Amino acid sequence: MVQPLRLLTFTSLFPNSAQPNHGIFVENRLRHLVAGGAVHSTVLAPTWWFPFRSPRFGTWGAYARVPAREERHGLVIHHPRALTVPKLGMNTAPYALYRAGRTALRRLIAEGQAFDAIDAHYLYPDGVAALWLAREFALPLAITARGSDVTELPDYKVPRRLIGRAIAGADALIAVSGGLKRRLVELGAPEDRVTVLRNGIDTAQFHPPPYDGIGDRAAARAKLGLTRPTLISVGGLIPRKRHNLTIDALALLPDWDLLIVGAGPEHARLAAQAASRGLGGRVRLLGPQPHAALPAFYGAADAMVLASSREGWANVLLESMACGTPVVASDIPGNPEVVQTRAAGLIVGENTAEGIAAAVRDLFATPTDRAATRHYAEAFGWEETSAGQLALFRRITGAAPAYPAHPVVQHAIHGASSHPSGQAA
Image (tube, rainbow, N blue to C red; front, top):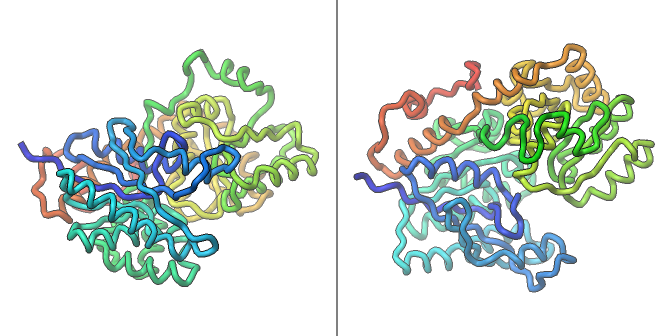
């Protein structure tokens, strides 16, 4: 019997008991990879040190409540503490993560664990720290780029220089969309070293009604008190998600209401914006919701709006579609790779409130069949992505294949990059 590949997954964004939605897309991909049995992973997810656990300290208090070790979905996760320096955090974060990771990795090895490769997520600061760990411990390294690590952070001098070194030093680079691959190449990555492995969707978790205690869509809507056509936006309340544009679009859509699910520093500003536009009764800021509860929100809504200025591969789009709810998404790199047919939804003509409102009107001028939307999402399962990861890690470690010649595996090995719908990615 061939021994499973032993990965060290290194990332500061991974769910934990104090922050259950923190980086859940990293966990989802890893869960599906290890489920096949050909890979075992130990997760090293450093978190920032803070002395006070009280909820009144917000995110920092949550960091303090993260346990040193925990298990989720059969994965063992270690959370060593990293020290950050106020006002210098962006520039010093890679070194802080490296120091915390090195101490923890030494301990794991002393306890008898061994690793074949490092699986790092986010080029900065995580990927930079992972490169230093890979060199010190003589391990191959694959880094997954996921969004702002290549679309935003390279705008800063120190991160850009260190990102360039991580790109040059990694044995393999993974991009979650073709748009991010193009950006990596612009930043100096050799094109043949970047593999596009999109995120997938768990259609067993995200699906149309019935849900627990909810028999059908009408019941889901009634539970949320929805009586009119309703849009939903899901994502952190931060500037790049541009919830403000969706609120402005609602002013142009008098027959519609809006649900916003998420938490963040823009909560008060968005609430004030809705009130000042006379939309207070039509915009509901619902705060953060458990990931497992999201299907009922998606399933009750009529359309999902994603107005972001930057994304890598927006999981919320597939989550919504899998629940039968079409989407309206901004025209930015990555989104057109997810939204390719009218059954899925529409890409806006221009990234403005007027563009969003026009796309909503267009989408519902000829309403999409919700069953067709669900069927579209079903093509985005995890099987191909997991096979692609397995092939990549076996390549950089020099391990012999230990899986049958399944067509999906062959597809990943030979580097074809087609969309599940048959269109090129």
